[in-house]
Image 1 (spheres, rainbow, N blue to C red):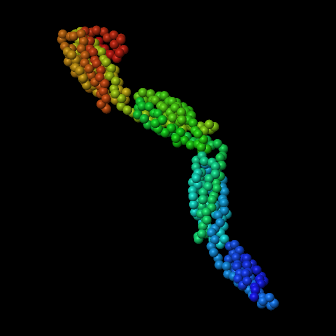
Image 2 (image 1 turned 180 degrees about the vertical axis):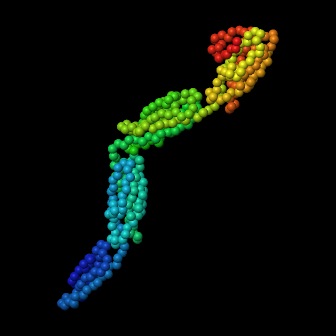
Image 3 (image 1 turned 120 degrees about the horizontal axis):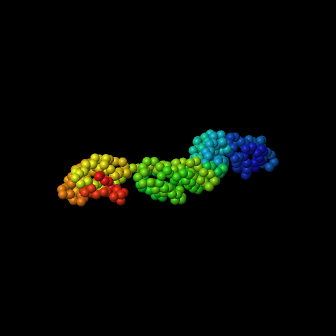
Length: 365
């Protein structure tokens, strides 16, 4: 006996081998199929016989198709689910698909939703091709797809400068080479190299451009408070809007300055009496404007002295009078810094010359 195929199956390929057969269903087909045959002895044939085949379904992994998107440099790409990475992916069983991030992009950040929508932000100044991988799942099986993003370079954009604030002690020098440069927090959206452009000088002190975004500022002596100057950054074509650098000069206590004093007492006149306005503090100075106190360091050689804290004094010469007498005093500020100065008293009414007066001496006729 032999088998003769009458009608081939509709959904697969059948191969007969004597009474045996091999059946291969069409790709991804499941359901029922059939074929018909007759048995013959070479002379007579049997009635037509139908063979039914049940093709059981087997889950197939979803198919991830390539995705390509485009965004301008430094701009955010927002893609809804309708155009997301799942929009062109398929599943034979038509199961609902979900997406999960498989690997992050190399030149930006992405937030991928399960429905395939995503938000992508390229790194600052990056332009070129970036990509990320995602896994698409039908709940049973999964496959990996890739999304390619072309980050295109747009027209040159204005750089952004951000102001600075520095604080240094009074009478010290600011040199940003020991700190970050003024350009450290400034940004060029196109990633171009920035240069510093000083737009204005501070009202006092000396400002120097050291290159590479660094400056040196030397304040005027004894100046405190806020000093400002303006600068911008340039990418070689466009400049940023002006910004300001503020330098806070923090007060530092300065020592007082004591000047020598010279007085003259006429013959027969005694004692020498000076109030605080005319006393030893009259030509002394404190850079910080502090109130100074006077103390005696070295008393007079022959006369007697009553020296007040406010610089006033009463001096009585010894008799017989020597040609001159003197003493040394100290001025002290509230922080304890001090300076010493000598006082000379001419006792025979000698005139006080201009040269001595110009040296900081005072006279009392």
